[in-house]
Amino acid sequence: KEIYGEKFIINWHHIEISKKLTDVYNGIVQNLVINMPPRHGKTTMLIFFTAWAIAKNPKSKFIYISSSDKLTNENSRFVRSIITHPIFETLFGVKISKDTKAKGLWHTDSLGGIMSSTISGQITGFGAGAIHSDTFAGAIVIDDPNKIRDYMTELERVPIDRFEDTIRNRRNGGNRTPIIINQQRTYLNDLSGYFYSDKTGLNYDKLIFPVIDNGVPLWAEKMGIDEIEQERTNSDYSFVFEAQYMQNPIPKLGTIFSDIKFYDHEIIPEQKIIMCDPSDGSDYFAAAVGTLCEGKIYIEDAIFNKYNLSTGVVILKDFIEKNKPDILYIETNIGGMALSEQFISHSKTFNYKYIPIKSTTNKLIRIVNEEIFIKENFYFKKTRSNEFNLFMNNFIFFNTNMKNKHDDAPDVIASISKHYRMLFQKLKKHA
Image (cartoon, rainbow, N blue to C red; front, side, top):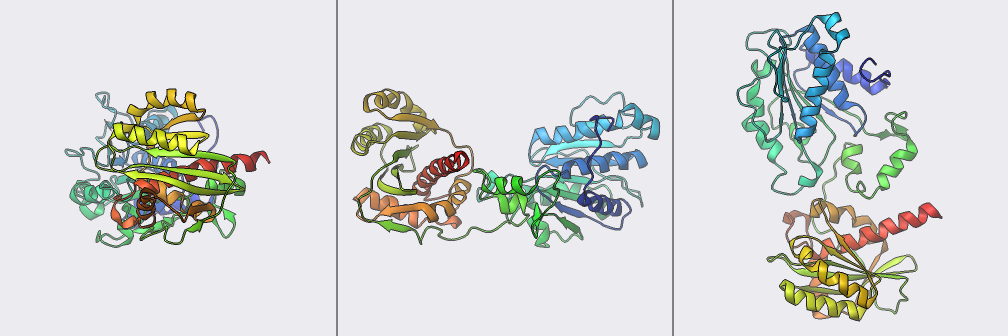
């Protein structure tokens, strides 16, 4: 209350977390894994716990680890702001060492304190806990170590590898120094999943809080039924909702578009877009036409070949003049940026809107995120050109086990899907 100017709203799950963290402090629980949704107080509870533990034992040494510099530094700064608050100092007499200057490393006058680092950062030269102590003397706190965008990429295993080769070895007291994983789930093989597979050899307790259980929100004051439903259908969360909000990551394995629908009849366009993903060299120059008609989306034509950029420009211009879109999207990767100037002038001549787009999320996430909408609303033309056939083969046989290989066509379709899904949501909201 003194720091924020208002009381912390306590929910039942905060009490459960407090009980379990107290058990960690008292040595009843050796290690702890907490899984709960974003914005439900999981990081705040760990910060309170750290400040409380330092109040009880100013020699306590903590290592704080997360996926980003911003989060680790913010957590360290927050604990420090509590400990340096005049009321805290009056109550507990704990002081920060005057020679502490580093943002990610500070000490109490009793040589306790915090070192913070990213999951892939350097933590050598500092250990958590104490060598000779039968009571609590600090812990390793790992807060949201995984990023959803790393799913099925070479970065997916980084937190696990770092945990095994470095992090677990930074416990001064060995197994007497607790490890606390504090995480919203991201995918099956995240660090929490690694603990649950029992490959660590460590004893641990777990607390798992889905955002809603049997129709009852976890913390209605923070996120009620309507907000939960909005999050479930939000464009950025339709794939990750089960993981980050329900703490139930679902594996997406195998071919996922083998049961799509086809058409071979005339349609009357209500809106027509072309999505293009230019080649960067090793992949395909891919584009497709997505046409809206009576609430459904029809994929009418496609480009799919290993064209270089100069050839691709000519092919795409012919493709546009043939299909007459209302909107052209070009993904602004390295190749797409080079095309922008040409299609700005071309769009004025042929009366369509040109929109460059930049995708920052993992391709696999983008594709799987659109799976349900594509299966429910998309129809693909039966009669096709040779390139269109190549495009469809690349799309239908896309396999989530391929570690992001053979994904140019499904990525184009996913981008068309996102455009129309957002349009449907906008129309529904205004209706």
